[in-house]
Length: 413
Ligand code: F3S
Image 1: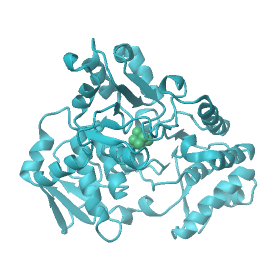
Image 2 (image 1 turned 120 degrees about the horizontal axis):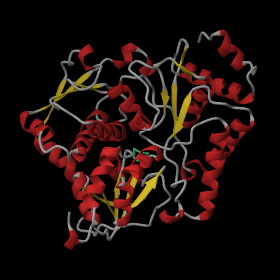
Image 3 (image 1 turned 45 degrees about the horizontal axis):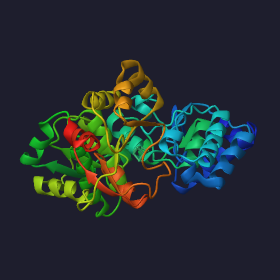
Image 4 (image 1 turned 45 degrees about the vertical axis):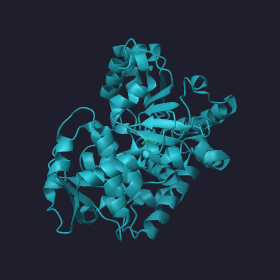
């Protein structure tokens, strides 16, 4: 790999131990993937923030990098942590876990990394523009950045994203190259399936989420890594696209898709000839497959996978105004979006109902295994991890109906 003078100096240790380690990680990655050079990045998002996932070994690595003088060279934010940083007691987090999680955040802070913990950095001040090279780690955000924004990022691991933060570089392979962004298979919604996407706005994040699962699973069954070109959706909101990205990345490992008339690179390509049609029956089956509670009583309600936008929080506040919730109800979002909710009075309406904000964290990365039996959500990604990580069963519904699950039956919204 050809390195610039600055990159060679970083590798030689002229910018300190942590920067050298970071450049070593990136050079090794570049070698594995056949990159010819590094590319400068302007934005980084680091995953592997929850102490529940990191453990002592992960914390030790971060501490070593901070002690070695590591300093972020570009705007860098974090994926959700294992708890609400300001209000962890209310979510039943133990003091021991809270202490360890704070040590993790302190290590990031010492490296000049902004400790905004969110999987929707594009809603919280870390928003790249079209064509910009970045190094993000959270799979749903990677898919959103590549597809909806038209920025360029591979799905980074925790250490490689940190290495990019400390050097401002990433190896130029994969999604950074034009040739890797060309679609190779078309998915087309038939007429009836299309109508389901075009009507009943605004309550369709769950349908986009189910579509992401369906397409993701079909791609998983095909050889090689494919970039899908999707036709027939017609229109999609920011919230629906973030939901779709989370599912497609979870069930199909997809980092980039093109959606005709919606995503910015779709006009640059012709739909590939190889085509898979999607009909309403398959879509209905995808929705059904996420409902595995088999008559069990919902005891946990969670919205915000990926983290909620301010419009979604406004809708929850509207639905909960004057009501009382009778189940544990987590509303997960980023700290900056929560501040807007505070200013607008949405927080008051939500908290008066008994629902809780779970800011900086989510129902997947928080240590809640075994605390609940059946979770209601509008997110196929949350369903996947609810079972895989926490062993919860799931009820998968439209957004408004998920809110309804939390409210007393005689006070239904
Ligand atoms: Fe975000 Fe947690 Fe879902 S990180 S995408 S809310 S699993």
